[in-house]
Length: 154
Length: 158
Image (cartoon, each protein chain N blue to C red):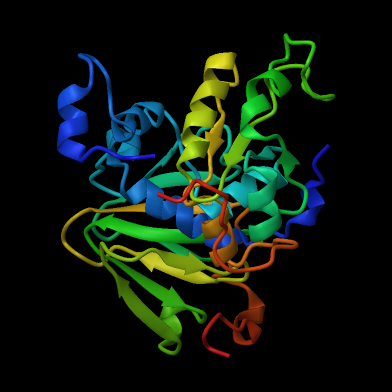
């Protein structure tokens, strides 16, 4: 896919169209994000660590033992207590949801969406799985090296 | 669903992380600071739901202090955000032995679960400090008159 130079792309953005960096700043407003050890502390107190990474990335990087795996494309349905496609155990809004992705960007969008569903204290892990592992917190599996998801390197 | 027991939590590192976040968020604790002519003013800092810890902001008038104590086995973190505090480690300050250090605004000081100390504001200006305990501060034991003074071995003095 050919990419326009950034300046040309910006000049063609419709009025009101925001860059993803701006959207991220917006998503993080009011989000009390957690560094890895604080996230682990939250989990020990009953929070769910929700891993939204795609399967290929989890296999490559490894996983957090005990995390609830819900890929991003089904996240809202699985965690909406009002929806029939919710996970077993999602019966209300009392459980704190802490979203983790690979590096802590996509997880902020996911957490913002969960807050709009009614999970008012939903948040995410600063630095994602990479920071979790670097902090020496437990992981399982993974084959090491950088994850390569076909066709998405830019 | 999730098995929380799969993760062993390093409470001290979690406390340090929280203290570092609080240092960067003065809007959370600054309104709680109360300057007194004498003694210390404590205020609990309200933390959002995901954070399973206790945090306090303490304002220390010049000359005020807290006698030698532990934290009931809780790990913690301490950071001075204004003024200076003197921390005596291990033995009572009056014993003339044991170590002390001056804490100033700067890095967060981790406190091991068995940390025993005495803290004083020996300066002429008020001091303000943030205190974090994980998983929470249940009790503090004051050890000033404890006959076991000589056997308490403090972190770092081993």
